[in-house]
Length: 426
Image 1 (cartoon, rainbow, N blue to C red):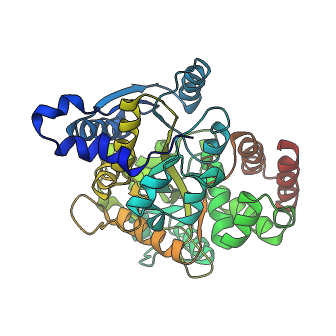
Image 2: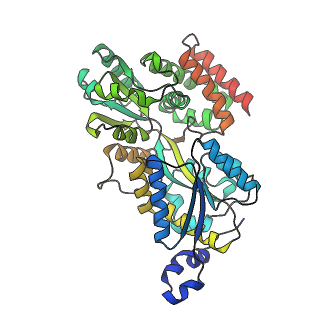
Image 3: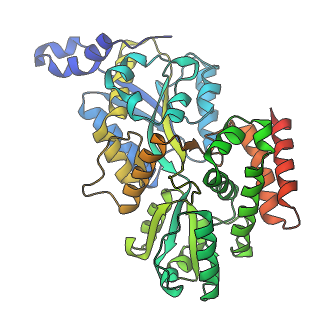
């Protein structure tokens, strides 16, 4: 593995900016080849802004966006790796980082990460994902919590409710109160596979983050058969019963008009829902964002993070570009810029979100992350391919989706099927 030592950083970035004008031609100009699936919307705007910052630092930014799903981007990445021409860095996240690092050589970022003190301000479970084999080879850039609770202000007014639910008992009581007050469907979630996965992971992690880590992240058989998993399925059934039965396979955004109007009451979603609501023309005054329900009094944070993996290149300009990119990704100002565009929160737990440009929802999310990290209650999302590789994730969500749609399946049967799915998928 190539080790980007401090001297490379200085030669490729800060050194380049410090030398007199006449000698700059002799210095290596940082260049970066990048592959991502971010082509449009806030994601496209954010990575374009990152590229401009790279160029402002004297670099050459060569981004090759691949429209469509992650699969298309991975196909292009695989083709370039097989051709012996991997990009200097590419978008990748979760356990796929470890899996893909076995396909081609990656760059050791340890020295740069240590110099930046980055590991101290990153959630431990998240840090481990980005340093498989003990070395940093990728860097997380932005975070979403998949279990934030969105509350319709009009539905709250209908129910004459002024308390944000903290526990699952609070949540269930508010849903029942909303229903009794004429809110047609207390839950406004959609019916896509990731949405079904979110209902389950929010339920289990909120009941016990310890059981979640054991069962979902470590695939411990005892935990998978444990009472907490069964209790999570009981909670998922309640959520499903409060939803519009006609939303199967539909994106949550189809419900936003009714949610804001107060015909639907609550939604368990990631922070991205804030961006979707605002882009649809709704106002921050139309809804409240709070951490998802948790039964032990401390926030539980289900992490979904985007990251860049750095591939080994021998060219001096690409190595200098990787060093510059690594510094930018870890920079608090860059993470601030990126998250303010996308609606996420920075990976760094030390970024100040008190100023303009941040919503109260983002501030609550960041505070929840900080508290969850301190109490070891930040865990990795199953629904968004952070907790397990794609094959295991797909098998588990098959079980969850079938359970949401088929009310004849009991929580005990669902827990048993989940364990069988895990056994059969790895």
